[in-house]
Length: 353
Image (cartoon, rainbow, N blue to C red; front, side, top):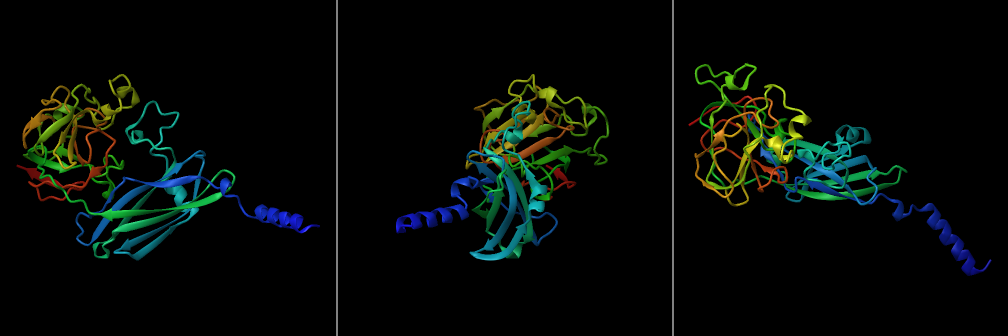
């Protein structure tokens, strides 16, 4: 056998035993939200929490399965903790959140921010504030339907948010925080991760109403106020009330409405405060919204009345601060109100003056 023939045989053997890079899954990682904020935990002065999704973005084949993951948490360039996830653990937190599936009746709010994702995995962390965690490095290994594996890594900055706008509670009187932030088990979509639900209470006994009709609720019809001055960039006033307190409406409720995706927010107002901070008030009474797009509003100005329109299980005000003007397409931001001292977590009573 000639030297050339022998060399060709050797090269063929080498390629036969080495996996082809072309056969490896082609994907990359994307974090949702784009900027991850940590918040100090309510009622606990020593820990902080942060949550993020890692979305596996596929180039062609989206039939990928998570095999293993490693997350390294760092402070000032030094690793302070490493965590490993097995295939079994990842299977429990795997989901599809940012891809509109073929059987969806229409684009749900969770899918309004669409990605060509194979799947995503949600990571939640709570650590001592003294660790001063400022970044996370995620290494994720996936496999395709034929068992071919590949790994990608993504670095993620972790920071506190510095609120720029001075905000007041969007209604006056007695109230209680219902649903709260994602870090304490509350709102779970990243477009409303730092949103809260505010319920009105009766001033005499401080109780919620147990009535089966909206008008008997203690907060029903309460004036909703602009939490800070700014310009109205969105206002909707035509979504009917949910007639059954205690149970959000189903798909048939939204389908006939104009722009059914934004109808999930009910009658809603969004105010631009400047500095990429926007207040969002949802679920107001049908026909009660008193402002229009382009109008300037002042802090404390009445903009509507507390209702139960859209995806509301009962009368309440959904409030969030977010980084952009459109519903579902911008991440929400951590915030605090100037005129109450109560921490913003579920079950906290307050009186806003």
